[in-house]
Length: 345
Ligand SMILES: Cc1ncc(COP(=O)(O)O)c(C=O)c1O
Image (cartoon, rainbow, N blue to C red; front, side):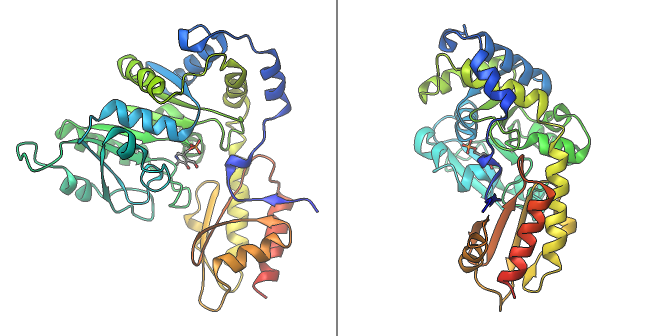
């Protein structure tokens, strides 16, 4: 039985073109700045986001951590959503490694943080009782908010607020190209108002490994040092970066297919009894829904799906997540819908 794996877009495998590029990659010692393939990827990434520079790191988690460590000193505070990946799913790295104090404010269902909530969380710099606020973190698209897209107009409002208080903005753009495709604007536009941006090659773009940190030349110089601190300097990393170049060149536009498949999935699920889901909320490739009272709880629902060869993620006692990606076709979505219908029968 073919398995339809909707747990995450991180399960994607490299394309044949990526494997070939990895085989052919020209290599050097990247910690010495001498890997031509990594250098090319970093130049491409910076250009795509219209930032001065970029640095290649092994993972999205390290990309965010490097950014937080570069913006904040020990005891300083970073404001972030209570549903932010950096807050929920990065093992508390910024606190554990950097002594950075995370200050959470509520994420709205559309992934935004209310401007009033951000402003209320900013500390009075003259009061010695408080940690000093340094940073506002945003996430676009927003993983736990069902792949919600933050608009450039919203980002500009946060920028204006940050400027009033002399704060920096970090964008966790793990899926920034999903946002760009959904909005129909360049990724540079999505990144415009952020001082630093991280994005992943190993999610919807299907590369096996790697993320980029982008920002000013001075910021990236700091980030490169933090990468080294974390042990993320990878020597002949061009063997991996080569796949990343193919990802940026060939895998961005096709994200629209994933969004169409997610929409098809959401519309089909919403018609089933026991599923609480508004398909109009699904903007990109992540579909999160609630199981109504009377339907099986999430673990039972996921087990019932798995028994039919469809894997989904359990993200709460009655919450399920399914993510469309490279390798998932329309037929697979229909199989998932048929399996869900069977489980809820
Ligand atoms: C929004 C977001 N940021 C960061 C990450 C971390 O990426 P990685 O798994 O490469 O460490 C993820 C991973 O799913 C994510 O969804």
